[in-house]
Image (cartoon, rainbow, N blue to C red):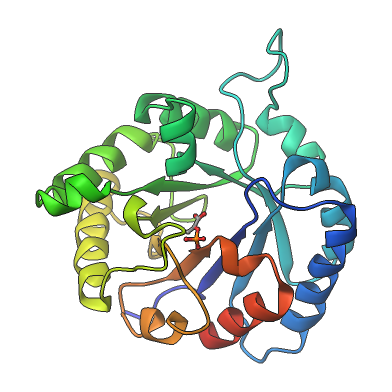
Length: 251
Ligand code: PEP
């Protein structure tokens, strides 16, 4: 079955000041000149969402946010709702990134509640799952991913609104990634779970991304896997030139 267009996401994490918006301009212009470009979404910090979304308006690039609150509004000092992100121009939000699970104690149950709120607000979601190094070494990759997937996705998810990103925690920012065969095996498990739970209602294939130390050096081999529908890129998305090399590898 031929899948949807490949998807390349750039997660800037807590990086980026206003002068870095030139990188968004360069990504926008670069993508416009790539033949058969994949779908591209850049996830800058919340402070840049509005300006970044103005820069990409009318282009092939979308802008997304890195987290949202579970509620719609109210007394939650410092938090941002999915509606606020949408109001700033975000089309998508990353939820359940391992850095939020680890540093903010976010559980899959919370991720699922946030995901449901985001979908209600009309924002697409990229839900991250993945095992730690210890779990990987103990052979728990499949069971951890199955459980996180089941617990993190809301029943409202559809292939049109929901993307799953398999991001082994030990591969993030480490320069070490699983082999293409290992990625394929986990993606097959993820896809199987999605099919079992949601059935194929729309006929559209669920997008399952790989994330963890993706770079221009390993992007092509990652895309070699028929199970990989795209990549979630952290460090290598900060500079437009490097990110565009990955985008070109997906074209
Ligand atoms: C990420 O932040 O989701 C990520 C995959 O980071 P990196 O590409 O830097 O490993």
